[in-house]
Image 1 (cartoon, rainbow, N blue to C red):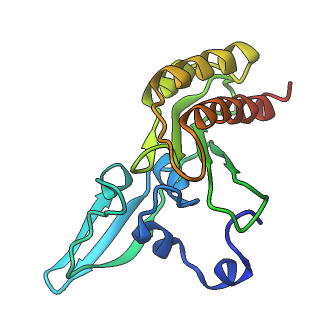
Image 2 (image 1 turned 90 degrees about the vertical axis):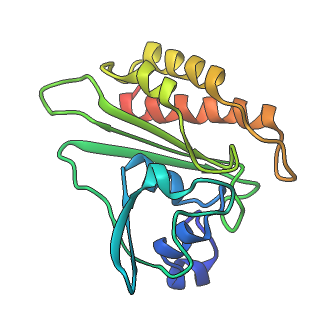
Length: 189
């Protein structure tokens, strides 16, 4: 409901959003947080590129001029969960100011989160992972203390851009609040 207009929702593709390579692309943090792999093909055959390597620079992909994006593989991981939030000027049809995906694994018998991944869009020239923030959450449960530690780590490692849509200070503040909210929603407190 928050991604694009009705036309985009009905005709746009995940692959098109990925290959467009806009750092504000709403689905890019999802693909990065989920550990997607992009299968590219040409007359020379197929090759795979991980999401971590797919967007090397602003509006650039690892796809060569003679290649097409054939498939996006998203691994099915047992006990993996994900939360997503987009912040824009309005609820829909807006380019994001902050977009975040949070993914983790949590076996039913354990309250601790494992393999935590935090990915953000509209923060830099490319979609980025917040690795220090991931470390701050790894092995912890979704408590207020975890949320506070994660936000502190995110604030330290984020160096957002200033552009026509938003300031770096706004992005840093909102990203922290979004992360806190995602953890709170999962923890139910």
